[in-house]
Image 1: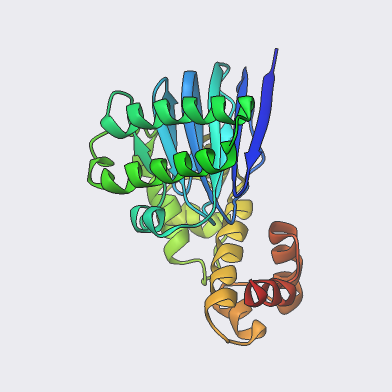
Image 2: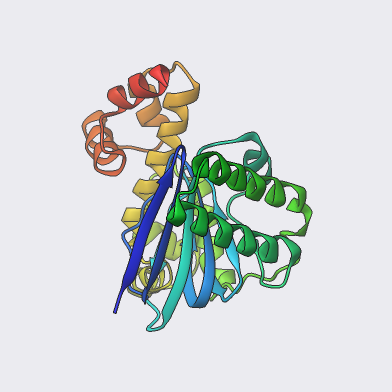
Length: 266
């Protein structure tokens, strides 16, 4: 039986869920997400790898990174903490998702702070919002100060050599005319095997992943440059402006023009 709740105070949201792991819709956020495993095992596809998280582990997922939970037939109990962008976390996640294994100092400390935050948000004592935001800031500092330890824990990446090579190739060549046949030839495997293999390991079809990478790169150009939308469309590998608009809206929830206006206002 699934048990879950969500608690909010100011700019932070803490979620709790205990359930059997099912495949989740791929998505990304404008904010940071911390996944802390209270008990059980959960498989997460994040960026270009599949991470197996066990009791006491936690994963920090930065804004705009594609991720999803994968079905593994097991149960897990987790905290999900959502935090607005801040400088401490930005400097730690420049290379993608950050993993800390159980028993490492940051994982132990983060677990303790999350438990305190859960209690504060439930009890709602005087000034609980200030305390909760203070605890969120404490977690950000813990992660930033122990950033050099993020390499110590070994992330379990299934079939890491092949799948990571394919994903990195897509990320480095998204502006090219990528398709199943071309990628299969590039990696010396049959198109049918590549299609099944990629979907099994990531939860995405190849086309879905390529479109997501292109849309995320387009978001970055829309936010950070004044280039014309047509130029961004071509730069990101879309075949036409209409295709760009359709795919971008399906992934981002708005047109490229509206996205640029929103980020300029923000």
